[in-house]
Image (cartoon, rainbow over all chains, first blue to last red; front, side):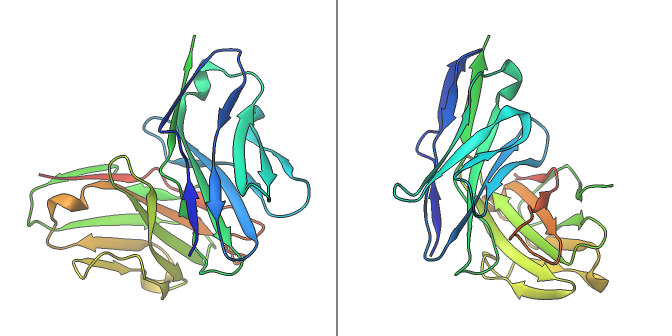
Length: 114
Length: 116
């Protein structure tokens, strides 16, 4: 079975500071990792994905994530947070050895304080 | 290009009533998925269609939930009769023939279902 853990329900950061939203995963095969964001009253929006290749993945709105196989982590990062980044962030995994469905974490609410 | 569309965006019904949610995927996408997020918890898989066929319905919670995808186009998810624990946000996603590998699934805005 595959699983995703987002250990922080809430992350607060001051505008202009770097932000990190943590994600760890467990899969039986090769992991395919995703970050999605949900803004208030909006649907889930794709941010970035890791399939293979470079461990540092760059995505939309200046976000990036680093795949760390030894730590089974895929933390989302941004060098300088904006108030508009405040939203609910979901990490998800899909394994080559599993059924063709995404498994999501429980979400992390990011609040960027002005 | 139109995205995944879901409606209604919000539904409030009484326990015991029936509700039907609809999802219109991106045109040409064979894969259609339903997910649900119950308050504060993870987004959980419900089922997966490939065209009009149910590929995987292992996430459907019980037989009060019925999903259909007539003609391999739009899909409906019916809850009958609704219970309080069915409240949550129901997401639909669609993907091309490659599934998730090499692509991303496109999600709709969700339907917030409240059972009172």
